[in-house]
Length: 322
Image (cartoon, rainbow, N blue to C red; front, side, top):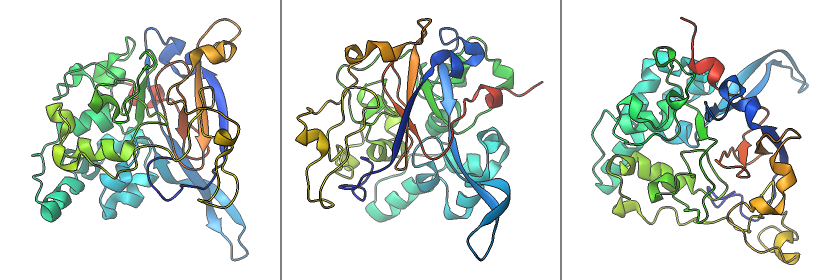
């Protein structure tokens, strides 16, 4: 995975499947309701015995929607509490909302590097992390992209802000993907879903430093972490992930290179047309589950990953009964 150097040269376990759009869209209608929200949880049994066996109810111990929220937005005192929450409860916890509207990382960067933190309240981050990007939220990002408020069948009065990875299923596949996603003018990229090629660390830092407010990259941190690409090329057909490494860690070539598969940084829709639709012609959404990350991307063949054991659609939580 490309969000850091640590996994370079190592392999991860991956499971890939494809799900019809109608199974994840509100009311089964992706044309009326193209925006979905997804997150995943890690759960374990409550009781752990000295012999290593577990028993009792399953409890949530971790969650993941947008990448780096717990690491870069939540302070240490809230990390465990955030991991135990489901997204429908986010807006009911003032301390969680407060850390989105006034995050800690920009203040630390200001203290260490003297780069001024954007002033609070950070309503741009509320759009990115809690409501999705939409002009209907009244925030500073003037676009209608990936908020469920843009779905025809969502009642705005019952909409609940919640942290999840949002994806507009109708966004066309980018012919020239940009690693900084939406911040670089590529609306198919993060935070509109998350593709394998999206540089989520650099994007998140840019967003925290106000790039989404101004519409311009923050020059002072434009170099980012300098991990700008995966260590091995992705493939052009589902599930798109790079083939396994061979040989010693950090010492051998990937099977992809050994087999002559060229680097492909975008989905090749023409390569496998049968996999893109169900028998009745409905479009399919690819899902790739790996032990290294959670990725979602717009478009017919752009994959998304979830962190551990399951994914959920959001329409049953972002609308509460009156």
